[in-house]
Length: 616
Image (cartoon, rainbow, N blue to C red):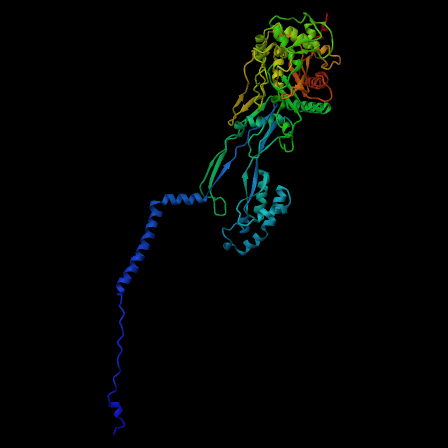
C-alpha cells in the first residue's frame, strides 16, 4: 500500500530525449574582418578622390568651377560716321541697348531659390511682373500687356523684351526699377545705325543689316574699316546671373570704326534728288540720275538717283531701286559722245571747227543706213555745226579719217571701258570696242551708238577732262578718313593725266557753247554765265531680240566757258513723255547749274558769248 507522500520520492519515468542537430557556427571574428576591410576600401577610395581633387587636380577643378561662374560678353564697336563735305552727318551710330529680362529672377525676387524667399520677397514677386511691364511700357513704349508673356515665362533666365533702346532711356528705367525695389532686368549694348536725313544720299550710303553689317552702298564697300574691332568683357556671375562685384573682371576695349568725309554737298544733293525725282514723275521715265562735279578737282558734289529709298527702313522698296543706277547701269550715251570724238579728231589735226563738211541725207554703216534726227538731203555744215546740230552722219564721215586704233586709244585715255573707282559697289566698266573693231562699230563709237556703253560718272569725268583744259582728273567721292586715334588721312582716286591739248579742249568747249547758243528754247542758259552743253538721245535694245524697247535721254553742261568750274550731267531712261535730251533732261540741268554756280561763288562771265555760225 502506498503512502501518501510516496509519489514525491518515487522515481519518475524517464523521458526519451530527442537529440537536436547542431548547425555550424561561423566564427564572429572573420565576419567583422570582412566588414572592416570593405569600410576601409570605401574610405580609401574617398580619401584618394579627395587627394586628387584637393592636390593633384586642384587647378583643373577650380578652373571648371570658375568656368561655370564665368560670363563672357562681346563689347560692340561703334560704327564710324559718314559726313558730307561740310561735316553734316549722313550716317551715324546711336548708343542703344537691348533690354533683357530674367523671368526666373523676377519670380524669386532675385533669390537663388524659391525656398530662400522671405514673406516680403513673395509679396514683391507676386506683383513684380505687372509693375515691371508698366515700367517697360513707360520707358520703352508699347502696352504693358505685350511684355507680360516674356516676363512670366517659367524657368527662363533670358528674354529680349525691347530692342534699340537709347542708353539714357535704359539708365532711367534702371533707376526706376531700383526705386521700386524690383529686379530682373539687364541690358546688352547693341548700337543702332541711323541716317538723320532719311532718303538723302541713300543710294550712296546704302544701309546695314540686322547684324550691323554693311549690306549696300558705302556701308558695304567700306564695311571693314567702318565696323572697327569688337571688344570683350569676361566676369564672374552668381547663379542668378548677376555680376559678382568683387569677382574677376577683365575687359578688352572695343576699337571704334573709322569716320569718312565725302565730297558730297548734302544741300545740293537734296535739291538734285528733288529735281530728278520730279522729272521722272513728269516724264514717266523708268529712272533718272544726276551727277554734279567740280571739274578742277574731280570732286563729286552730287550723285542722285530716282526712284530712291530711306536707308533707315528700306522694307517695301522695289529691289531695283535699292542700288545706285548711276554707277551700275551702263547705257548708250548718244550724242554726248560726239564731244569726245571731236576732241580726238581735232587733237590729231584731222578736223577743225571752221571746216565745212558736206553731210548727205544718210550714210551706210555695215548692213544698215544711219540717219540724223531730222530729215534732210545733202547739206553743208561747219564742223562746229555738226556738234551743234548733233549730226550722226557728219560725225561718222569725219571720224572715218582717224584710224580705229587712235580712236580707241583716245577713248581709253578719256576713261571709257574702265571703272571710275568711286568706291561704290557694283560699278560697271561699260563697253568700249577693241582697237580691231569692225567698221560699223567704229561708226557707232563715233556718234554714241550701240557700239559703246558708259556710266554716268564715266561720261562726266570724260567731258570734265575737256572742261579742265584737256586734263583728265579722276572723280573723287571719298574726301578723307579719320582713324580711331584721330589721325586724318586725305583720300584720292588716282593721278591726273593729259588727254588732249589745251587748244583742242578750248575748241571743243566753243563747239559746245555754239550748241547751247543755237538751242531754240535756250534750254541751257544761265543768267550771267556763258554755258556750253550737249544733248544725247539713244536707243535701248533688247539684247535677246535686238528690238528697240525705249530711249535714253541725257544732257550735259559746263560753265562758265571761259574757265569751267561746274559740270552737271542728267540721264533719264525710257521716258514716256518726251524723246529728246533737250526737253527731258535739259530742264534739270539748267535748274541745277543755276543753283550750283552762285552756291560756290563762281564769278560771272565778263564777256558775251560769240554768235558763231554753224553753217556756211
